[in-house]
Length: 170
Image 1 (tube, rainbow, N blue to C red):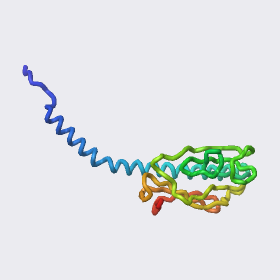
Image 2 (image 1 turned 120 degrees about the vertical axis):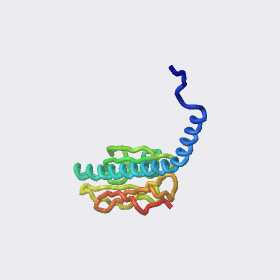
Image 3 (image 1 turned 180 degrees about the horizontal axis):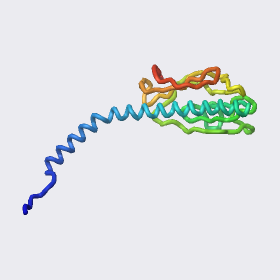
Image 4 (image 1 turned 90 degrees about the vertical axis):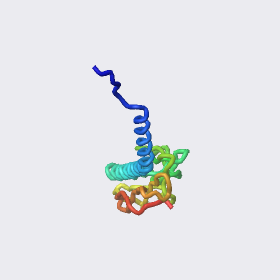
């Protein structure tokens, strides 16, 4: 019988470790851009889903529904990056008040990211599903010039569609 030890020598182990470190160093930046893109796609999908939901509730219940960014006092003059609320707007004034019914809320986006300035202050859907507010919400991951930015456009007919190309937050 042979008493030869089987396994890796210290030098072989160090070489494997150096190769792994080099591969991780090369792959990390592309992983960050992949995560940026996933965050942007997820946010745009959530916005679109909630806009469609608000429109469907407005039509189904023949009422006015508003989707607006939250501020600290439950009003609608906040920043889209801080989260937003969908509610039945009984008196159609665009503010969440005591007589209104909150339907859904989303929390703040990732602190590294932001929403393009100049986004509409709210989206209001009437009982026919039409929107009195039109515009584009643009989600910008990491930096304003990031090519992974995604957006959602809302038309006057209330249609919400995702936009994937040509967006930035500059």
